[in-house]
Length: 130
Image (cartoon, rainbow, N blue to C red):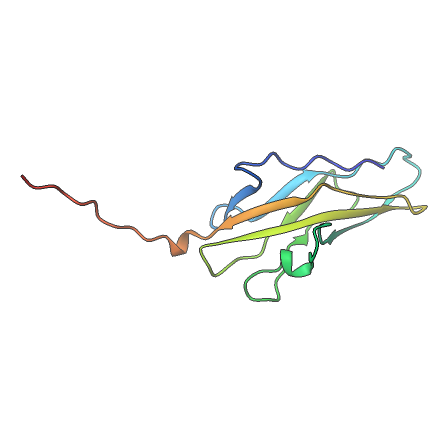
């Protein structure tokens, strides 16, 4: 079973989502080389980084997590990122898939920066008077 590619990073090492525009991250589904062995599950899992945990893909409320909103039968693997109540938050995780017969694989690490524009501060420009 082969893992899908993740979306290209829109910045140095993360993919950026603006909370009020979209909270969905979508990639192609895992590909199983044997069509007779169904893909059974897609679950989120911490990265391989030392100290990684489910908190890495949990919102600022400490409860809401990134969730998969598609089934293994869908062509795309869609994840919904929870809302945040701060300027920005990074969510970092992998997706683990298991097929009938036990074959499994992981995506590369997915790192998403969510920006909440509600916390944007606008200021007036300064004028230089002669």
